[in-house]
Image 1: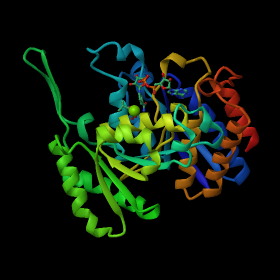
Image 2: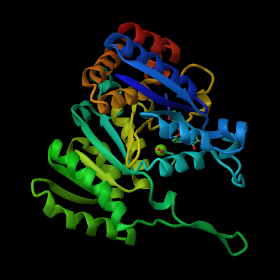
Image 3: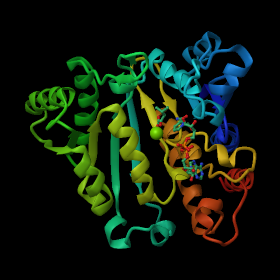
Image 4: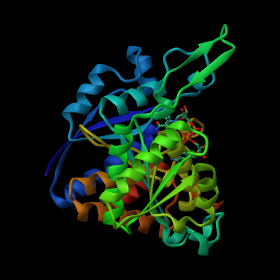
Amino acid sequence: MKLNIALLAGDGIGPEVIDQAVKVSNAIAKKYNHEISWTPALTGAAAIDAVGEPYPDETHAVCEAADAVLFGAIGHPRFDNDPSAKVRPEQGLLKMRQKLGLFANVRPTFTFPSLIDKSPLKRERIEGTDLIILRELTGGVYFGERGRKDNGNTAFDTMTYTRAEIQRLAKKGFEMAMARSKKLCCVDKANVLESSRLWRETVQAMEKDYPEVTVSYEFVDAVAMRLVQWPKGYDVIITENLFGDILTDEASVISGSMGLMPSASVGTKTRLYEPIHGSYPQAAGKDIANPLATVLSAAMMFEDFDLKEEAQAIRDVVNKSLAEGVVSEDLAEGGKAYKTSEIGDWLAKNI
Ligand SMILES: NC(=O)C1=CN([C@@H]2O[C@H](COP(=O)(O)OP(=O)(O)OC[C@H]3O[C@@H](n4cnc5c(N)ncnc54)[C@H](O)[C@@H]3O)[C@@H](O)[C@H]2O)C=CC1
Ligand SMILES: CC(C)CC(=O)C(=O)O
Ligand SMILES: [Mg+2]
């Protein structure tokens, strides 16, 4: 197969983890006779520095022309620490998601056999966890009306959803549940928020179309507790943008590290694969970040091209690396920590 992949490395550890995913993908291409052409493009703070805008039109054109996008991370402390900055890297991420129509973010949470006892959570609670948080990605408070009033002394952000936005995300959730254990949990805050009540009303109305799916409705605060208390109680979770953002970082504790959590963003135009973590600026340039979230995002990309054996080969080599102790600092627990680049080399060699 010939694949044209847009490569958006971004900021901080973005370029370092992307490099490893490219090494692994190229090794897969070589082994299984595929041809991958990578087209790099600017995004985030790197793009602001170069052209003054975090998601330039040229980058959008590259993404639109590609078969898929592999994305690293964006964000830089000089913007995080400057609340008055008018142009911010994160605006690029949101614009990209919106312009590419990526309304659903698939964030799986699973455990790795060799890491289970390293989790702060007990083995019996997490072993066998296999859940998906399907996060709405182009609506809600990240995209609602915001501003200041009262001479800047009052600030507001608006959480807005349309029925159609909820329906298209929920449809994906129901379909995923049908293909898995037929269990769907809609996470909201319908006891307080009107937008959550629209979520609940909309999902309830769709239940009749999927009679085999058992649907539960839970409040996000309680789910934040239950997710780490008994993650095996969940299979497919659907939720709005902000709640999904927060719950998935929390879920990384079940797997063992933020550096292990992949994702796929899907929607109306193209597909984008990215780790759930950010640019981890404290690690930038040190070659210490865990590249596996990005490598496993590439596995999700192969899976979606229906290259299932290739995707499995990546997951297998990742498991092998963890079992053999080829781990980065976040998982080393005082033992030998491999460099980001060494892990990429090891994985590519062992494909
Ligand atoms: N999708 C994206 O591009 C995202 C960008 N950001 C941006 O990233 C910057 C940093 O934000 P933070 O809140 O610190 O989130 P972050 O996800 O970059 O880092 C949070 C913590 O997670 C751990 N971590 C993250 N990635 C790791 C990896 N690959 N290997 C090992 N450990 C890892 C580290 O302990 C780190 O301190 C900000 O500018 C933020 O806006 C944050 C989240 C997502
Ligand atoms: C800028 C944020 C919306 C990025 C983030 O935290 C995420 O997508 O997980
Ligand atoms: Mg996040």
